[in-house]
Amino acid sequence: MKPLPTLLVLALLGSSCKRQVPDVVSSPPAPDAVAVVGDRTITRSTLEREMARRGPASTRDEILGDLIHFEATLARARSSGFDQDPAVRTAIEHLLVSRFEERELGGTENPSVSDDDVRARYAADANRYQIPAAARGAVLLLKAIPKAAPEQRESLARKAHELHATAASLDPAGFARLIREQSEDQATRYQAGDTGWVTASGKDGWEPTIAEALLALKTPGAIAPLIETPRGFHIVRLTDTRVATTHPLSKVRDAIRHQLQQEKRTQLIATFHSRMEAGLHIQTNFTVLQQIQNPRTTASVPPSMP
Image (cartoon, rainbow, N blue to C red; front, side, top):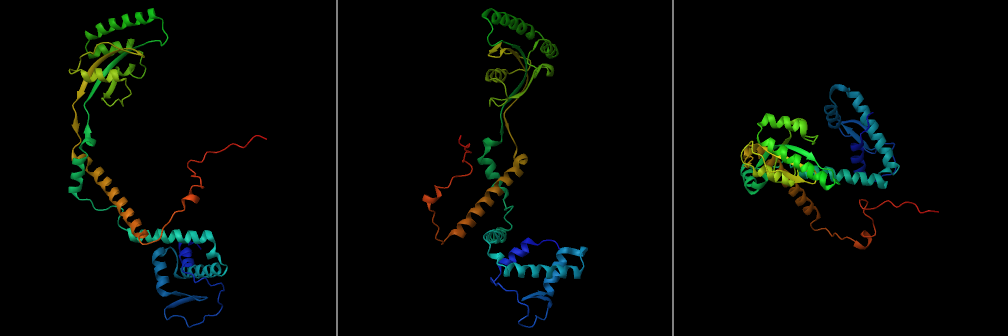
């Protein structure tokens, strides 16, 4: 027989705490009784419900046999006092609360959200759906040695200025070749120095001066003044621009609706808990509570040395 823990727990919950298994039925069985186990009756409707739940994989007699096994085990569990075991009582209480919450909060997984609610949230959170202005460029880097002597730094600067002048006379294909030949940024050297889209947010991985230089350029093909950073010298050329815009409502409607549904469900649950606690005397003993360490902040203490 397959274990039926939920049924067993619910049956234990309904126990009248009897300690003996009756051997004789004290009253005649009900007219619709299919079987009797001790003082418990398996009715026709009980058997038919279990048959419908299991489907044709099991026969009628097999299912009845399983129900009889279950009732017999339940009777023995009750008579042994197993239903009074603290761990069992806790499991019963958790199941009771869980099933009660399912019944009371059923159908609230996806609360109704109107189109007007979605439009109102979209308008209220307009900044959230903005796409910032961005620029895309190509960068040639000449790396500087952090502790280089002044003359080495000056030599690198002269080379950077020469390459910057050369870059100004090249078309995009020529600048891409120059990057492959001279750039020391391995991440972009063989991608024609492509920076990807860079915004003023500073979340693109580029130094702020690089982003600022790119965003300051207006015409694709324009080259920024030579940029010096702790990494070295950067030659930056604008390849494309993107104006600031906003995600249309049609693109974010589903995400907004989902967010509102989650907020409504959270509120429904909070209201339910408040209703459950209303009228009950609830008091916390903070003196005892503060003596209990929070497991999330408890640090492991190494054993003391002998």
